[in-house]
Image (tube, rainbow, N blue to C red):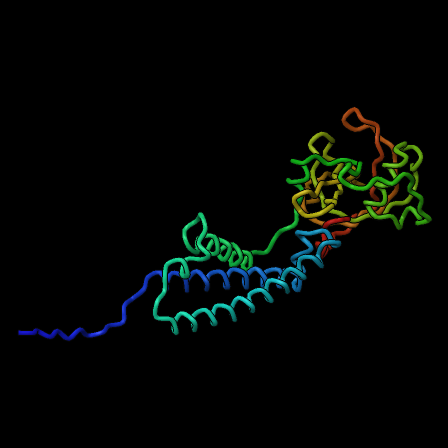
Length: 272
């Protein structure tokens, strides 16, 4: 006697297939998020707090490239899903062709998380505490190109703080500038080694990105009172003239301020 058994065909759940799809979606989401992040930072001006102006074009170009890659990835993902549905026999090698040392999708999930955090985060410019920690100087460091000569027809009162620093780099004798008019802008810091009637006026110089920014500045002798009236990190326009004084056992150029005017923080607080 022959016994016939009817087998009902059922559609099986393939965990590897679902894993592959999830990984593909995470890859696309991570690439898209980073593209959007770079373009958002460029359009909102946040990129100025992170990169030297000469490299901003690289950042937003990378954003466009990443969005283009994400578009291609979406098309490839859709095509692969369609192909997997058409094929009846699938092996693990096809499904796991993009797996690496890390668990599937782990690196993409991490990149996506960082990008989403970046979209909600507003970078802040370096300020007085960072300047004190890194050490404020009156010289441009060797990470910048050093001019063999520095000549300018700019009147002293039209020089920026960085122009003054460059001038001192070439000819550091402070008496050569005594009596010259000054009109510079920067943020306030309280120098610990000088009397209370002095403040520092400083700016960060950026050479590539915010990670290598370093502070330069000059001491300012207040017209009256003490520095408690001038809060650190506030931006001021300082008008006055240059004098030579000895501070902390160092003979140096000092701004004798006649007027200090508080100003808004500039959109690009770094000098280059």
